[in-house]
Length: 287
Length: 310
Image (cartoon, rainbow over all chains, first blue to last red):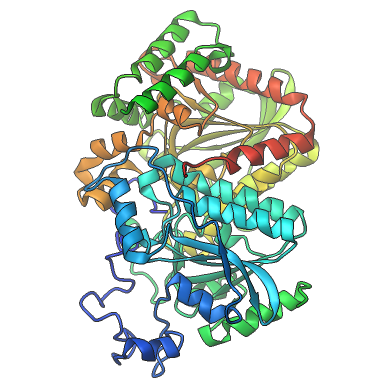
């Protein structure tokens, strides 16, 4: 969620999918590494899980590719694909919200910013809820909230663990107060899962900010994050403008969050699959 | 507004004109005014009218949490500190008697003069404030005290230390604690219901808004800066958000509106407190007989159902 302050200054970098994910890379090609400047063909990056072979920089991963990286081959069965957002406020900024939704769907091939379903990770069955930042900045509106809540319901019904992968700028402003209500909504669904003895493992990918960090993404039984992932409630620019102080170099990054005790471990992408499998085994999953 | 939407609105208004919405209010003039205000919703509320509410919600003379506490609670005892690091003065907490029984109270607190405003950090809490809130929620649960929260914040504080101390996680956990409570809970937005900082203490059985309060996902200024790329479009953003009480009621986000004296709560804080007290007492009375398990289940189901999708 975009942080609101008494000031009118706000971080816009995470709110628009057109915006770059890193400062200072605005004009660079998406396959040029912001860490070391190496350039890759798309298939090269794909083969390396979108991690720079030179310097280890983690490029963003789309939702479907993330699932492909994590789960046993062809084990993923998607559900809830028909859900589409309504337009409760008849919201119109520079364009109508309905038009933004339609454009995002055409551009991404997704109905909204979250993909859910069942899968196996090293033979262990689980439920997945994976976000895609390229659909309106991964913002959480009614559909993301509902999909996550249903993922919790299904996990309870099937007695399966739930793995979530977040990447989101926060609540979707175009849905106004109803977007804010997706925070308690997802939390209430997750509480039901926890009451039923279920487990949720939350993976935090770059960037996870605002309403996502202030809801389910922070409430996993175990919190994992990718190296260099931004995870902060308020974006760095808002904080810099509000406080007028120079931010620490690693402000809001997963490394800083590990130091301050907010996550359990930073997991480089190639290790994510075996680490998830280890956790699922420890929480009692059987093939 | 489309015909369907208008029909829905009429239907809803018809229901609202019944006792439910206006319960707890004996002042018939206030009733009528509120009724008129709801009727006006049928015509599209103008940008100006909504903006007037934003200004009233932020009015410097508007009663804050402690102004209400001294008027509606007897024998109030303030509780301080998160038992870990500090006492965040942007959130006040305590126990006191409401209508003869002990309740727990939590609320954002703004300051009236510059010194007090700074001390209260303009009502913008650090994670420590939400941790203080959580420990008082748990205290209420242990002793079976009903919980009243008063929401009045521009948002959670966006600062370096706030992030380092886990602002997002604290807001998430505070909501989770509220979703687990076994006691009746009522939240009233008494001024600004700003985003995550507000919802952190508003996952209640009954969520009410004062007539001139606002509740939104982001400040109108923030929204304008992002979506219109121009913070001066705040009026337009405020009206696009429908952040006023009547629209929040229409969207099903709140259960009722607490009337204010004509011209806003700041014109007569004592009368505003009477209206607030009556509303809270009657909602708590309704919740009192409900079994803890059912209370919790119903509360979760209510939030679980929010959202518009097909």
